[in-house]
Length: 244
Image (tube, rainbow, N blue to C red; front, side):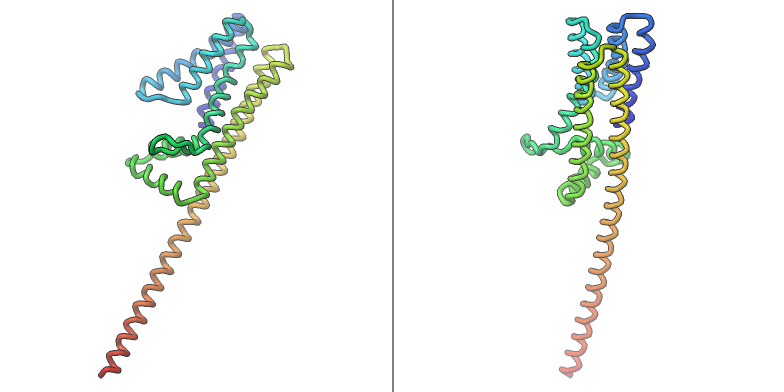
């Protein structure tokens, strides 16, 4: 997810800085968003399903482009990417609330992302879903992990919008706004990606320890059953000898 968002961020920046030497800043910003929009549309067409993140990107692109055309202000158009990240951040934060719809209870967004990755690398999607549902129901650490990761990503994305608004209010040069806001976004992506990887490794370590604990408990239980069975057999032999 982090790599995908970094790619979506870097490509428009490169296009903008190349085109701004030949066209107006507004047109450069507008053209910089076209490849990203085309990629989202092509992905949705090939996979034949609704991509929520893709829909948010398209909505953010359309709204900010409309604002840019109406106001003819390049600085206002810079809110395009912030509109997308704000919408994504709010969506992630909303999924932290266990909202119920019919028989389904909403879970943190990163839970669905990670489960989809697990499904794509497995032969049985139903088995993966059953295992993940079982882990969700029985392990509080599993639930807290995805809640924390989802919350961190949500707050990080929302913070980008706040920082860009602050830059738009304090800086006059469009290039400076693009430069500093995208540096901040890259730093946020790197930090969030690092936190996610470290947390995933920690969760896997916890899972391995839990597996060892379960196996040790099963071995102890088996030993106790053997001892109890041997004691019962010994008691039965004593009873037989006494009767004789």
